[in-house]
Amino acid sequence: MGREALVATFAREAGLLAAIHAARQSGHAVGEVFAPYPVHGLDEALDAPPSRLPWITLAGGMAGLVAAAVFQAWAAVIDWPLNVGGKPANSALAFLPITFEATVLLGGLATAGAFFWRSRLGPRAVPRRLAAGVTDDVLALVLPLGSIGDEEALRELLAAAGAREIRKEVW
Amino acid sequence: MTDLLELRPALLEGSPTLRQITEEIARPLDARPTLGWLACFLAAATALGLGAAAATYEVMTGIGTWGLNKTVGWAFDITNFVFWIGIGHAGTLISAILLLLRQKWRTAISRSAEGMTIFAVMCAGLFPLLHMGRPWFAFWIFPYPNGRGPLWVNFRSPLLWDVVAISTYFTISLVFWYVGMIPDLATLRDRTEKRWKRRIYGLLSLGWDGSRKTWSRYETLSLILAGLATPLVVSVHSIVSMDFATSVIPGWHATIFPPYFVAGAVFSGFGMVMTLLILTRKVMALERYITPRHLEAMAKVLLLTGSLVGFCYLTELFIAWYGGNPFERAAFWNRATGPYAWAYWTMMTCNLFVPQLLWSKRVRTSVPALFVISLLVNVGMWFERFVIIVTSLHRDFLPSSWWMYKPTVIEVAILIGSFGLFFTLFLLFVRTLPIISMWEIKGLAAEASRSAAEKA
Image (cartoon, rainbow over all chains, first blue to last red):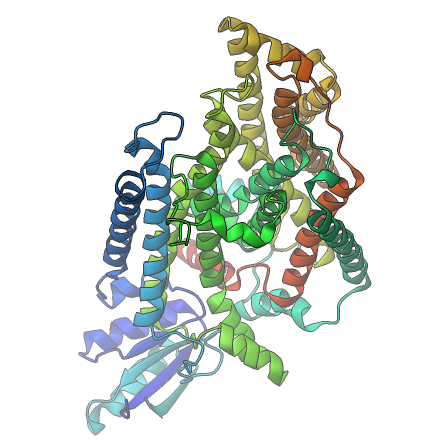
């Protein structure tokens, strides 16, 4: 994004959470956090809103449900009613298993697709590398610098929380 | 509560650092294959080659190369199909249902169990495909606009439900497995030194950088996929059982079939996971991550599902007698005392009696005993399907059509080939992808150190 930010790395999540707490207390915005595993309590510490992915699941699932139910009924009742063992053309109960499977399939694929799209993940996506080792054992906190004046204060705050390394980066 | 938890043996042995976790799980991927691995791979690839040759011969010659006859029209292939589909149930159960139930012990074994699911479903799909005789027309089972009307597939048929259920199961399991691996693929991308490997892991990890927002969405996605996969697991084997239950063959026509098949599938799947993991933890030196506590927890699931299956066997027998239907009675009497009684009693021994040994803590904590029991469970569950399918068919409604079924060399070779395919894929998997979810183990380790810090 072409702005300057301080990137601090931590070895333990306690230090990271303390730094986030202190930064937010003193009115700084948190740019991003990178971690090798989902840090418990991070979303709460940042007051991040919950993901809206479940709505995509609902929409995809409903689409699958309606598509499968309508298509089976249309094919078996309207387009070509076949007499199979004297059963009624509209044996709606027999259409349930496929309707269920289509609901799950489209719900799942839509959610996974939306996740990739929103998170900008793809075979050609380039990972942001602000700190080495964030996929191994390093937790990194990115604090964007608002004005020049507060850089020293931020560095002190991060060091007090136990940051291992503090660097200035453009992100 | 915490004190009680303290008494349990650990899910992780020692307290590895995050770096150690990465190193220990990823190291086998960089090392040269061991002699043990090469020997296993050679054996598996040979079996696969044998099966491929037999399948090629069968496709070129026709289904006449099998032992099927007018009376027994389904036998070895459908037995193998149901057997493999059953094996494929443990993976999603471990990764989805146990995730929702917050069973932390699943962490270390979920990745390999999911992989096993995918390979087992591939093996299963092979058999109906070959049974078609003309597998190049396999696409006819899908409803697509065709030049014959269009003539649609019969949506009332359980066989079609089966096709849809298994394709859905395979797709969702594959997505679940792959999505679960993305953070670990990024870890491998960032640590590997070989350029070609880094390129491949880079492509597969989709630019993952571990940002908070992505992790947050990622956990939501995992939970949703788990929630979707849970009813899916139950639906797949229920639908497989309807292939039999909706017919009017004595021995098949039973309402107990769906829960009975699901319990059997979980039982056989856990049996196979147990077999594979006991071997893998030894060969890949992962005893720290796949601990005796994991094996014991799986043994408890085996005991539970084995008892459920045994309860179903006894219920079936009771209802066959109590229901008063002479054909049903004859079918079950024939199972226990007829020409295939040896298969029936093999099944009863392996599935009903042997798992009862797991009530003993000494058996549950002995790795050699668990290994033998898991093999017997696999054998028993294969015979369960054989008993259900063949003994129900070989006594036709017309006594003049009564006939016996015996598999041919070709059928046995194709079964061996399916084991070859399964083990070849599994062995390639343990060499190329992290078989234990590194990011989940790291979360577990962080949690352990957090609770230790809280106590201090």
